[in-house]
Every structure is written in C-alpha cells, then in structure tokens.
Amino acid sequence: MMDALAGQSLQSIYGVFEKMKQKNTPAKPASPPIKPTTTPTTPSGPSDAEKAEAESLKGKGNAAMAKKDYPSAVEYYTQALRFVPNNPIYLSNRAAAYSSTAQYEKAILDAQVAVDTDPSYAKAWSRLGHARFAKGDARGAMEAYKAGIEAEGNGGSQITRNGYETAKRKVEEEIAAEADNITPPSGPSTSRGAGGAGGGAGGMPDLSSLAGMLGGAGAPFGGGGMPDLSSIMSNPMFAQMAQNLMSNPALMQNMMNNPALREMLDSVGGDDGEGPGAGGGRSMPDLSGLLADPSIAEM
Image 1 (spheres, helix red, strand yellow):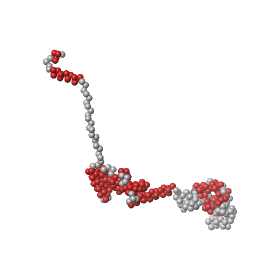
Image 2: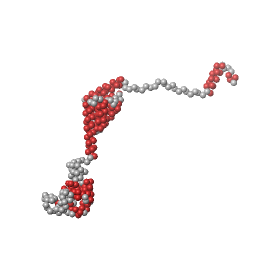
Image 3: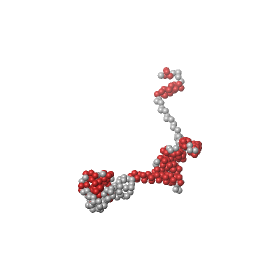
Image 4: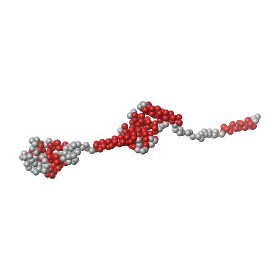
C-alpha cells in the first residue's frame, strides 16, 4: 500500500480518495420542480373592442330587418352573439327575425333564453308571446304577454295588451270547443228539454207524443179510443218498452214498422182525416194480444 502511494503528493492522494467515496455513495433523488406561485387568470368577459364590434353587427342586423332581409339579419345577430353570448337584446332581435321567416321554434328558444337572462326585458316577453301564439300555443302566449305587461309596468303597452287579449280570446274559444266535444250537440228535438219530442242525437221522443201517435191520451177504452197514458205505463211491458226507447230511440222506427201496431193505428185513425173519436166506429185491437207480439215485447 505504501509502495503504491510512494512518489504521489498528498493532494493527488486526496483526489483519488474523493473519487472512490463518490462511487460508493448513493445518488440523491432529484428535487421536484418549483411550481409557480401565480395562478392563471380567467377571462372577465368580452373586451371593449369586442363589445363595440357586437354593437356594430347588431346595427347591421337592425338595418337588414328594416329592409325585410331577414336571413341577413339572423346572420348579423348570430355574429354579434359570438362576441357577447346570451345578450338578451341580440337574442330578442334574432327571435323577431326568426318569426318573420316562420321559424317559430327557433324564435321561441331565443326569446326564452332572453327572458331567462333578463326577466325585466319586456320586448323579449312580447316576442315570446308572438312566437308561441303563431305556433298554436295560445295559453303559453297569454302567459308570456302577461309577464311582458308586468315587466313594462303601468298596465303595459298597447301592443302587449292587444297580444294578451288576442291570446285570451283564443284560449276561451278552445275551452268552449272542448266543452262542445264533451256535451252532445243539441238539435231542434233536444232543445225542448227532457220532455221534448223527436229523436235527435241522444234524444228520445217524449211519451206524450207517443200517446198522440197511438190515438191520443185520456180517451177511455172502446169506440176506437185509447187508454190514457197513466194506464198504459201501469202495464209492466209498456214501462219496459218506454225505458228501452229512452236508451235507444232507433227502436221507435222498428216499433212503427210492426204490422200489429200499424193495424192498431189504422183502427184509431188514418189518412182520411178521421181521428180518434171522430165517429168512424173503428175498434181497438186487444192490448194484451198486441203485447204478446214477440217483436213488441222485445222492445
């Protein structure tokens, strides 16, 4: 060992020692990178230059609307919205342009976003009402116009009030039409009430008319007369027949086509102008025999 170090200076010997020491010492892990202390900033909104450009585009859109160039107006307002998204004025104006080209669904969407963004913007409510009404939603239009009147204050503008009244009348017409679809239509026969004659839709010939057709009520038996109505209805079969007639007036026609009933009518009166009790001396078929007829009994 000493022979190997002979002839070397102390400094060179120390250098060799340091090199050997570094080889035997494990390397230290690298230090993590230092993170910046500043946080990235978020955009605070459109710049003044962007706002100015959006206003310029809105002006071009308004000019296109005045010329009735609605597709160009839509494009200008769309470009303005790229600079200032969800601006209620730009959205409301584009809704008006969409309505002018009958694109009511798009108009409703724009106007709805406009009033959601600024519920106090009355013009957007009015345009929402117009688009809903044109789409067939009278109730929704009435609600939008009402909100517009409240946003305007002082009873609202004449245009908004007119829109509200128009939508309200349409709603009333729809309610009346729905009621007509539920209630059976009344005709000349049913307008006379529950006891009216005739057999209109859902109607029923009243029993007094039936008695008149059978020769009159109140006349005694014999001499071609008829028993009074109370006597007829006291018979269970006649009572059942009357009940069936009330549920199905079409049975009246079937009953009148019955030969036995026709014979009874001919015996009471006929086309010669002689009615019951006119002195024709015609006899009345036996009532029990008439009721025994199966076609009449089934009624």
